[in-house]
Length: 486
Image (tube, rainbow, N blue to C red; front, side, top):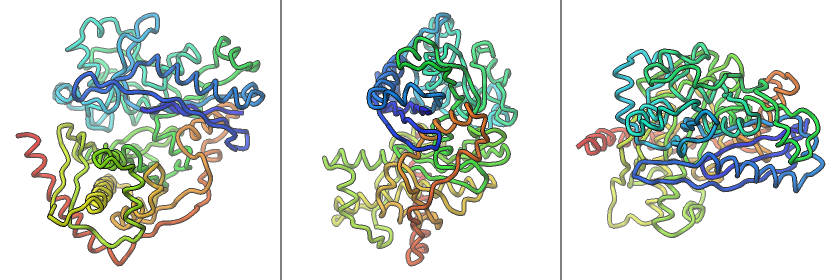
């Protein structure tokens, strides 16, 4: 038996999986985000641990015999969060999360002081990444910074509590801006420019390697009598790729979740920093990945649903499932800034083209189309980096809307495949990596794709119209950029 734990922003989720990769149980525990100032986003690491124990407790209560037979646990989690610990492994302050934007000035300072950082890390330094957060701490909370003995990523704090070890995996470490992503090793230069050293970093392993073993005190809580291995695991998107089977060049998935991700494995380190493409290590050995990331995908629809006081599925269901071509109203989904391709934390969204006839349905369609255009931005700059995506798996909560998938498939002019089966997300990918670690199995043989339940093809009747609409969408960005900087 194997467990996968996924530390998200809003909850911790866990699954219990058999040797044959059948998911027999799942549980989740909620988390809350603290926003003490505009642009700040924090969580208490102790809440992560309490929620993880609650998930394991729930799995044990529902499957007591199976939990005793667990041989491995895999970890996945939200990336980039700065979890700073003292010499006794106690958090010095709340963790600064991936969607925290306070360190924009520190990003500029780091890139100015260390121009080679993009070449080494494969990424533009963005406020979401870990490195500028530590520079912010040094500037604004120097007493805390002086006491930092270890810096861990969120899921690796859970690992610490499970094993007593300071360890991370390559895919998560690649999102710090401290990793030499091509060499898959910490960059001493990048660390020095942040006032840190390798001593303060966790040891690195691949996602399917053993990172440590479960502490006896935790094992006793669940009646586990055998040695339980903890796999390296992966950052949330890399682990999700393992869950959907996107582990080879030519594979891809589109995640239509709170944020939006277009993820493609690559056989080599191939950055495109000028367009905000993320070039990270994959959670499988000798593989890398490229990602285009938009910050507000279903989050844009949730924002609109909150304004109307109507659940998001009701908004989309009211439009039916007929495509009908682009609407007159247009939405740019930059509610909290944007990553790919603009890398602009102060950018904000807009509705354009509103008229007296614009109603709730027109605004809903505009939001769905705006997110689709943002995905096309990602597709375009991934192609500029040499990565072609002929088709992609569609995952995430937004993929339940067939109309939204039709819009995206037509805007991208790419078919989208819906996977058959149940659990295929990051927690499942983490459990698969645990299986690899325990059995010393090849990840490509374990992380296979599911059957295709359905394929959403582009609607050729409307591709030309959506091409024209995308052109208008792109022409609006310079005005928003100027407005944000005025």
